[in-house]
Length: 448
Image (tube, rainbow, N blue to C red; front, side, top):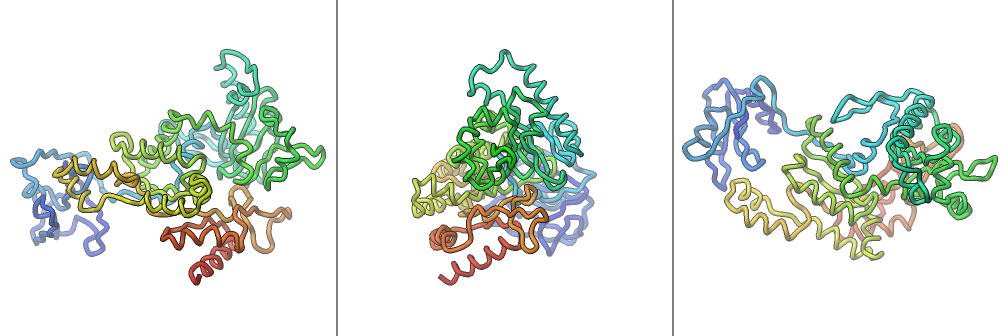
């Protein structure tokens, strides 16, 4: 396929655009790439694609002299003839599954939120707007039910789960009294826009018997109590508190729903010109499940026109290796094993399709789903959730941020085996205090 365009922007600093008089193409479809330069001036520009790979750049006359119709099956596409073609954009920090799950839920975000399959969702500018929208979602949910929930398990399944509350824009958190205005007969759970926090109404707390276990649950940092009654106030702030509300997410993590959620976000990305995204925390919900879902989703190029580079949650990697850090390090290294560029190029020329398939079956990393030997450590918590660690003078209301990994020797001990094992590591740090933690920890690891 040869695409013709008004201009083709390259990422070659010596030749940034194909509208210049000079042009080049691969001189022949061989294993060796040779540049062919000329001073001839041609009107059009074009790019040749074979097996999803760029195999020639120049103008139409030049490309047809190499990829001629007498030797190859060539199609010329003039869809972009009056437009500019640029390299695909890269979003280095996105979460295809968790982000797609969140954005495909009923939306109560402060800002207008894009929808890849219809009109954008209008932002909620006040708490009143949020409650009104949630009430409409509850009404719709009840109308779709064939019967009343009879058990607590059924009550959990009948939950109205929404996403998008913005604590910064709205000036604070929701609590169970706010959400009790939405419904007293159905669980209502609001996932905040950072996806680090959740807010529950009284019915949701009852469905999971959380108040019955409050003495134990409230020991978890971020599980908040009502200062007047001593009961849970419905606020689960930060990643440490979120596992207590995990049952409400089971329905949206069914295999079929996971695929739809990932399609939602990748389609939104595709419409924005993104062709490669970075999953910066594989294992948010369940590492084994997510590895399987990502494998199926991203390695079907007929369904997903997107590449994904993956960073694995270090804590989840250790947990999935039965608590063995050394086994986790080996697992991360094994995931990185990939098909060489030489084999990929053979595949692009259709010279060894069978060999390529055999090679891909032997490793987890492919040209579409790339494990780059990276692990992630989460230091503090969320900016938009107001749970990050702040430096002086701190939060004006006096509350403190949350450490997901306490600074100090224990944190170093967690990271050192991955460093010695040759893994890349990514620090999640939000503000100056946690950044200082990162620099001190990294310096210690580097010198030890």
